[in-house]
Image (cartoon, rainbow, N blue to C red; front, side):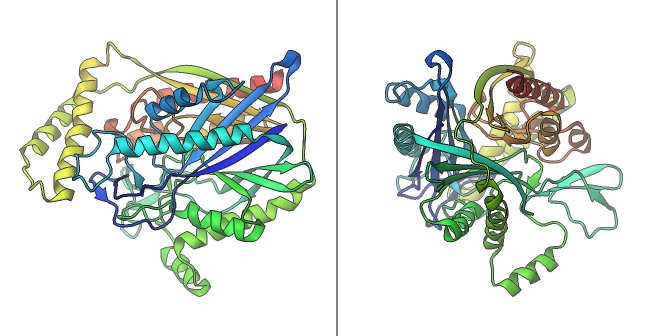
Length: 466
């Protein structure tokens, strides 16, 4: 196995518009750096047909397909012997990283870096990291392990009558239950050199990086503290590649036990982000001695890529009428352009509901959504990608049916043929309504989710049949 690592600093040098809310936030400072970490893998195959993969984890809210396409085009002439379709990027889903697409928020003043300017910086620096990782491949080995860390929680609260609300209150008389499950598993993939020295870790857990999601500064959120804590324990030269598992209905925000958790953090003298970093690092510490005992220098390695055509979520006549009503209401508002929050919110909401109106008119002619899925086998580990904020239940269905010892589901990869693939909710969530399960939030719905699950499982299990 040939293994190469690299990391790029993708922190903006000027103020930017931060992506992640329904209004524009201009960054006031850099709280901590943004990074993109690249891992290159290659294994010799029969007749010189080597298997390959390059995965890149980015401190971003999402990875638009246009950015992945730009990066692939930039790298094609620079990566000797690499197949461009074996590259994929994933986002950690921090809400305090720059907007990278034009038109999502209103244009800002000249002092603010435009999305296009940041996209140019991002693609250039990530490309350099990918080339460095690929050209730096050396012989090594892999090992894997499974741990636990309480980080993500289901963020949808259900009330009497079966209606849910994202981040709903639990101290109400009509509180019934938390809508869905939560998964505290931590899937770990370790890389080693031939001297049995740890070189890097892929860490996959079902939680987006959004503790401080509403702030007006640049930050990697809790992955910054997690990287710091892991490196404090294992060494500054260890690369860390975070992956967000299926977590469309998950969040690090506490809806239950807030006071008890806050008291325990006070006693430890830690912030919420530092506490999450401590939990992740402790999970790594717990698994590492066991993983060190079984390092594989020639594990089975397979990587397949397939384009899936998923049925779109059809906009109903009632949803269309509601979207038109919302458009009319927001059109009638005339906030002062100097009021950045109100002015940008009107802009975003008009775009949000305008897209639903446009979908209704075009959906009979465009009934499918095309997306790319990567399926990998790395020893006894499976890895599968999707571009959505995929609700946890779909990820669990994949994990439950896959023949691998461990299955890494990687959401928010830049492989959907759309600027924003949106949430992919369960039928239960759609019936209970609320943000994340509304038609404006979904390009595809529960039916497509099951199609995605079924085909992903088929792709993964086929890698064990070979």
